[in-house]
Amino acid sequence: MASNTHAYRHYASAPIKSSKDAEIEIILDTTRRLSRAYTTQSTDYASFALALQDNRKLWITLATDVATSGNLLSADLRAKIFYLAEFTQDYTRKVLSKNLSPEPLLDVNLAILRGLTPDRSVA
Image (cartoon, rainbow, N blue to C red; front, side, top):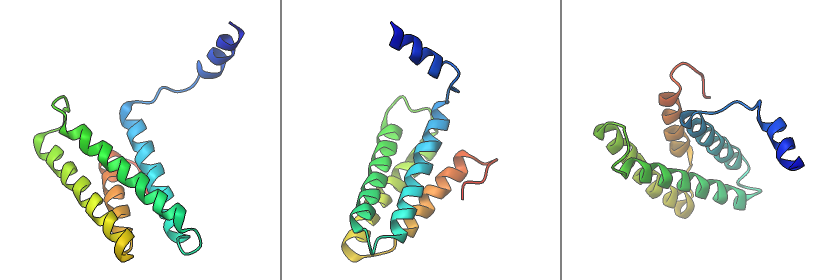
């Protein structure tokens, strides 16, 4: 019982995040990690490849979400997000196999963040 009391005291005052806030936080964190890993890829390629894989997983999740029948976004917006997920998958393969810059992936993520946070700066 004591551990439950401790947990309650610790988390009772924690702000409750909306699903949109959580989504923004995940996309922002993934984008930041990819950007940092890109700058150090020559000395830590494993971290760069892992950051690319995490970004790929993010987009697989987004594509899965917009493909479900319960998604409330418009059909047009769902299609655009699904297309961006396909682009991300394809371009990530090219980054890894042809040593291309991941900047287009970062640009896509930042565009999504700007759409989710029109009143805030996300750079």
